[in-house]
Length: 257
Ligand code: MN
View 1 (tube, rainbow, N blue to C red):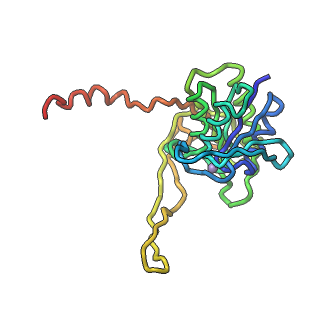
View 2: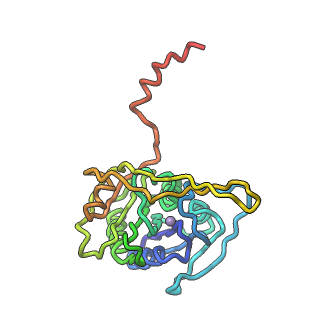
View 3: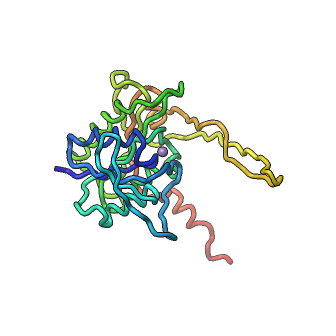
């Protein structure tokens, strides 16, 4: 029976991780180990300058869980380094409240927590759901169902080393989701804007504000798939090398001082 390590970046008490844990329980043993608060958009954070505490808690359905004051990747690392003693077969993160598409990869605590699992040599899946446009409460039922379908296939077919499957699901009932598309990362359009205000002592402080990001819904991409009502599965690897620029860079006359 496979043993799943489940984490997230929205915090151990977020509804998305409960939906994910419940979806995977029929497939194997589930260990939940997630941060004690929201770490969204924290990137691949590793705590180096303070000790980490781990405590036991419960999800809303009574499922036992572990939580720590570390980052999402810290939680995965702590678990795999021995806080969780039983060997883990697969790391699954999410279900994030909000999609993780295109260039969100380096911001996403959901994806980087899965990357921590991949770095430790385990297959890893990150699951995110786009939020309903009308601001209504997200229903994670369909995303949980799709997460289970993806995990079943990872168990059946396996993944090469150091690979993360990045799964995104549109905010639709399952019967309205057209299917699952295998995609590449698309182009995100960020609409960040600087908000400058004055504190009570008349010193400026800043928010990085602006509209939520958009994206180019190109065919074959994660952004395109969601725009058309499909769930998206993008294979990611941890090699960020831009191979096409290696030779041109070598021509940059490096001998000259
Ligand atoms: Mn999040």
